[in-house]
Length: 265
Image (cartoon, rainbow, N blue to C red; front, side, top):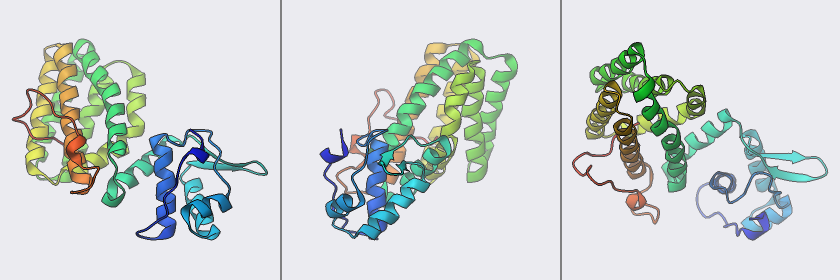
């Protein structure tokens, strides 16, 4: 899809600058504006957004700072692939401000986590050493004691997921997980709003750990998959504004888990 194929919407709420930047940012994150796409000129964008050229110029400057576009002198402005730090910051901003939250942001995060972490859990069940199994168990114990203490919970929860990736003995899985760390930590923090979700999260981590302990790779992978799906449903219900057309109704449900509320992390 080219930039000319996309109909930009005139901003109607909040600051004009913030809306123009947010809309362009979302088009890049969703893939509708693909890496390498040349953007229309400032004048063309100003006409499409029904704003002044200075507004577009400032919005483009913001996107440039965020690592989402680059301008080639005498040639134009192009969508670029953001580096890990820029991408994490952009996604965190979308997740932090509910008015900008969109299901595709959460969907992208959990698609990536599922691809990495389900495989990591399966491999950890077959490859983890006694020390690594003990480390994972310690993280679960830390989570148990950290209930009611958000900062400690986030650290223990994130430590669990790192420990599982390390125990897979595939360094690439840990490398793929690393850029998502800040985003995952934010999603855990957001889910702390629901005490029931914390209790369910602890139960899910214990299930994953027990499967790894007994070396059951299929059960470990399935437990991680179900945990991530529950976490996604919970996060979507928190971040997407109630009553919006993009509410949490699109989040998947899972057979056999009706008795367990969505869980954080």
